Image (tube, rainbow, N blue to C red; front, side):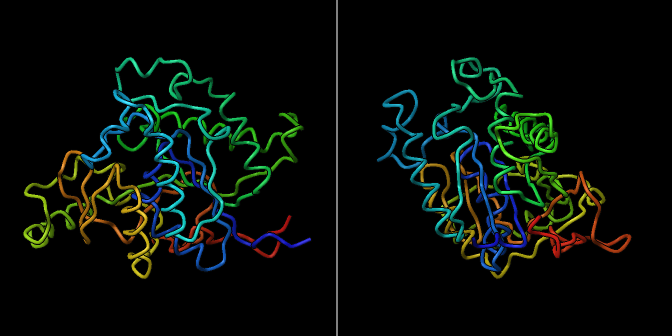
Length: 302
């Protein structure tokens, strides 16, 4: 029997494309370095706005076939990042995109926002006990920017981390496993402000005439809260290619991208995190440069 890779990373995201925007460089870097990288996506993103006019017929208020199309986009993006293990929570289509806050989609049958947290978490517990990651990455309690599915992904991920380690919980889902470190996606405020100041120079060579603002970037926090940074500059091309694969949702003109609002943003090739569970592997006052820093990888096959 082949031993699993010593380093195992699990990421939990709400919709296809969230992973590439937030963690594309990190995922590509660890995959290229031989770590096992697993992505769990909670919905198909059925309620997303469609950017290309020729694909507008896919939208939820027309054919309602966007979710199936985005499954293909996600597969193409993962190929660009070198990630072979990507799954949908509870199976493809188990939970539906809940739409934006306050919309009727929040309460439709099957909407992720309306799902029972423990029931949804059990699906993730099964993945955790199978993959046995040392590190899990997800959103903060606000989901980064308040989207219902992002908030629910946070709740489900954190609950699953707790339940996966409890021997009394669902022995049929595998042997208990404790996730050693949990991170939330972050962007230091100083970095966001600097990168947006630099946008002016790149904007004339782009198809956009206006920019987003720092307030539009999910997960921006004061610098002191950021514990970890992953230098993904060597994988910036892979991240941009993965984002480009999500063509219904993202337009990419390196070093910029835009969502359906047509407002330019910088593509971040250094990605940032806040360690919220587990011990930091960095010296006091310093940031980690490895999500696995401080872990005993000699016993990684346990």
